[in-house]
Amino acid sequence: MSRLKEMLSQAERVGVIGSPSTTSELAIDVLGTAADRKLVGEFALFAFHQDGLPHYAMGQITEVMLRNVWHEDPTMRSLIRQRGRVDAVSARQDTHLAKMTLSAVFREVGGRYEPAVLGTVPSTGTPVVLVDDAILDELLSAYRDQLFYLGQVFGAKPKLPMWFKHFGTGPAGAGEAYHLGIFGKTGSGKSTIAKMILLAYARHPDMGILVIDPQGEFAKDLGGDPAPARFRLPMKRLVEGMGRRPYVIGVQDLVLDRWELFQQILFESPFFERLSVPKGENRRIAAEVLSERLQKARVKLEDLHTQEAFQRAWDLLLDESVQKQFYRSAGSRERFQGMLAEADSTSFYEEYWLPVAELFCKDRSEANTVGSVINGLLRRQGEGRGLYVVDLSLEQSADLFWNDTIQAMIIKRLLEELNWQARKAYEEGGSLNTMVVIDEAHRLAPRRASSEEDDAIQGVRRVLVDAARTTRKYGLGWMFISQTLYSLDVEILQQLRIMFFGFGLALGQEYQALRQLVGSSSAALNLYQLFRDPHSAFDDESRTYSFMTVGPVSPLSFAGTPLFFNAFNRVEEFLRANGFEVG
Image (cartoon, rainbow, N blue to C red; front, side, top):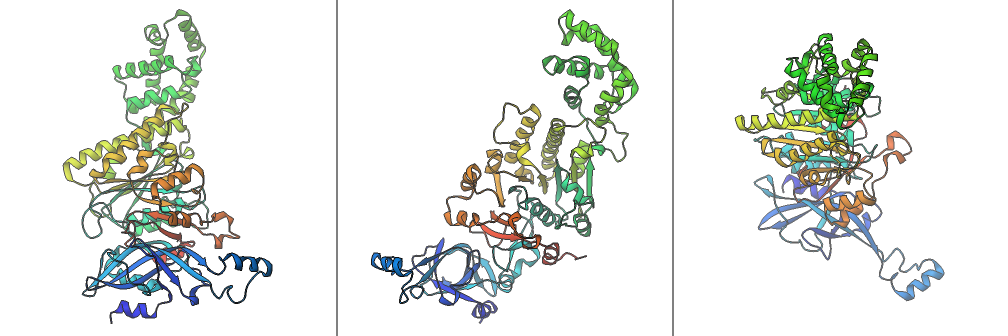
């Protein structure tokens, strides 16, 4: 008897294969001894023979149905209405039928377990047992080094084995890049799951990782100063323990390097507004003309913060030939000249020019241009490639001019540089083996453009949609983190290979979008609707962060069916399960 068969003989038996069953969904007649235990969400397994070899099929119990044919009889129902129960049939004649959605099949060949398919339905009466950690360890013993754990099987004790392969070749490689999506309402645990997954990918030393962080949450964690929370992952210590160095680059350290950006940011800033040029076509032309004249005067971008560069710009604005390019009427020019004459140029330099020009200054400590950041990310450095986090949060902007539009412009610049260098590096040396994490993706790539949406956000969305379509062949994958499913651009959703769905997508348009992605499997969606709001728990210790995952994220999901799990609720559990030092 093989080791696995011996383990199955000692496992808890909960039922037998019943009728009707198909190769995708099996009916399980629940044994009386298991009728009063929780079964929904449990992983179950049965052994059978196919083509002369022992096989093992595994799946998740998604539903349990109670039937009592006597209670369905009209005459008996009349008696029950009067008496409440009929002792001869109530409870005693109950039958429980469970539905099991198949997720994985293995065949045993020479003591090894290989992926297989369920090509037939085993006979009725075939025993069905519950899976535990020991059984999973035995089945997946050949892949033990590749496994990673985010939590336990939904509503059960066994840890759900997952694997997050890098985008290169080899035993731990997927051979190609793919895109991931993590969705859930605020408080559903999606950010924590994203950080766990980031650690899973960081285990691959030759995989590059870039996090574009509009809110600054990842930057705090990887900078060693996580926000106060009960579940505080020591991200910096863990990443450094893998031989990786996290580079946290704030706005103060990021140097912009395009005149087009200067022109756009100057347009958004109060500089021209204080000179009576309202936001519109005139201001756009004024910013464009000033940018062109400064370039012709051989003023360098990195020198714009100097008093000399500002004075050159101020003199250009005093030039009537320049004024005529954005103000055709003499009256408008006279008003503009009057504002210039009354303005204190020193005050203008300090309050309105410098906050914009400093974005392009290289004299700041640890300054990095956009190009150098992306070059460092994609450069093949052998073992221990860098992990970069670009912190674009408002609190990092300090004295710089900053708002959501400027943030979007810089993100667009980063993405354009990334796509350009990725294409170039791919042409020179094959797969890039790089993952890019986009937080707050619903803000950067909304499904529909609104009338109030500015050009910067539209530009980011266009770049992200194009990247989702084209960069997989470069070995460049993307992880999109979003509070909403319906509001994210549909073309990005269609390109996602692996998806995680947390609490909060079971109503309205969110649920319709979920159904389109998961398919028409009512059993899986019914199980998803059982997810509880984590914040409805009585205390922190009893909070449950449940997720449904779709795609090839687990050796138990190659049948393509959704898997359900509860994320670890304690940091120590996560660290211990994945072999990290608990300290």
